[in-house]
Image 1: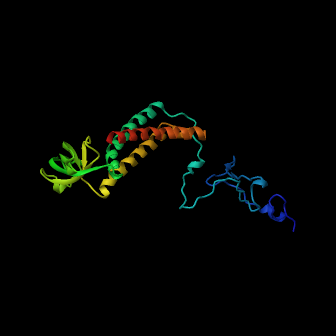
Image 2 (image 1 turned 30 degrees about the vertical axis):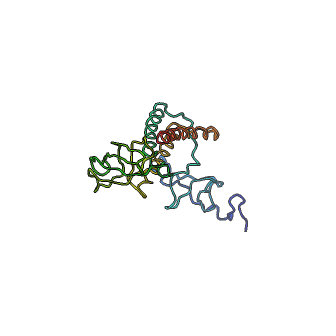
Image 3 (image 1 turned 90 degrees about the vertical axis):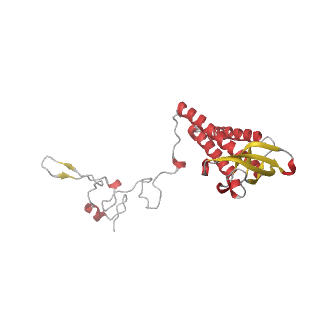
Length: 242
């Protein structure tokens, strides 16, 4: 049997090819009202008239596959970021970093063992839940020192009454917060705070354009600088809480 070299089809089957039409596209109308169909070149169709799929053509994805392109396949934008938006993001996220570093510095020192144990006498509590604010007088163990009118954190709501005595810890004589909570709650304070610091650092790297450098070396240095700022702020609050 003689075979056509281009398509690999039998020679006698070629005249029975089907006219090629694109999906959803009709042929051109002639002056007499008939429809003129498009016959593709033999190099672009199979012997039965179906189009040959080009290499790299888009295929139908399975329903369970993501429809968005992978991030590594996207070309990095060469357009520079908006300086005003980047500056606003830098200032706002730096302030948020300072807050998270401040609330996690004391609990982190307590978690690593830098703490003075004692007892605190609650003198006043206002609010409830997350808005609860308590103050009291702290007395270190063996009566080494006393602190008056300091803030007390972690007071159970059922014991938030004047005169309640609770075991507490603080980082030193100059500390202004005594922590009465123990267990998982004590660790969540510094863990969530440090996660907030890392989130702010990632936001700074994203919104200031540090991740948009096309050169890998420059991009690494820019991202490192974006993370270095929140790290320095956190170290400063740790030093102040010592």
